[in-house]
Length: 304
Image 1 (cartoon, one colour):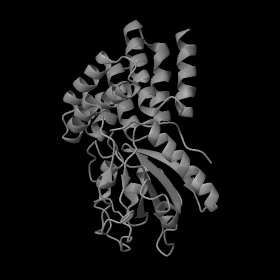
Image 2 (cartoon, rainbow, N blue to C red; image 1 turned 90 degrees about the vertical axis):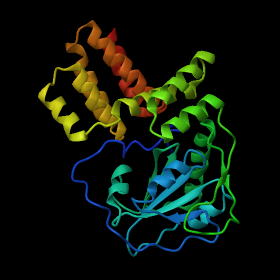
Image 3 (cartoon, one colour; image 1 turned 60 degrees about the vertical axis):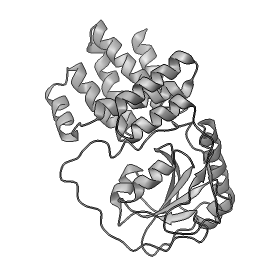
Image 4 (cartoon, rainbow, N blue to C red; image 1 turned 120 degrees about the vertical axis):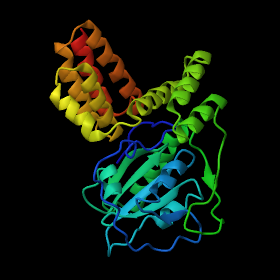
């Protein structure tokens, strides 16, 4: 088992960004008590945003289970001494979370780094395999500066304890704070300033791509975006908008295929718009994502 390449520090969960019509309320379910260490917490769709926020500072493991099948990863997570947090989720009572992680069967585990989902494994692997995956998750987190930890001795109150973390660079912190308040234009400006100061700041480049996506999707309604794309299949703007929507929901293949299928029919201006947007998506997903590698190869063939 292995996990994908690095995700983006300071990102936020994109799955709830776009308003969806007629979304049913979450189904209430029974929740186990929090652990004495404070490193394990049961979450629901209502409380999951707290976990997303925490994942910008401490890697989070999400364990999805079914009624009658108790979570099993707690002791392993606790053995990491606060470098990981475990969020347990009753998948039946919280189908929205299962859908966000594209989980079709339980038990299953996923990670959250900087607000972005990272698939881990399905089923119940042996402990040494689980530890190998968790070690990889910590490595990816460290590559993105997510190096906080929790105090295992903190009192259990149903929420994870406050993390101890290294501070973000000032402009990154400014961008993250702006994203947290929904001021995506300010986040874009902060990341651009960081890139001007250091063009090799890879995290700022990725941050700019994601903040720009957030800015474009702010206030969008999913049904309207998809309807417009269906009504105007040759419209570059409409197809770019629905591709943004696909990326926000984690459906990278759909976004890549849509734009790459459209590419050969476009004029020079349209091709440049699609190429630029695809490069932003590659930054958001990370170069080690196999979907990015495949799309990049296909784009190269289309360009030359």
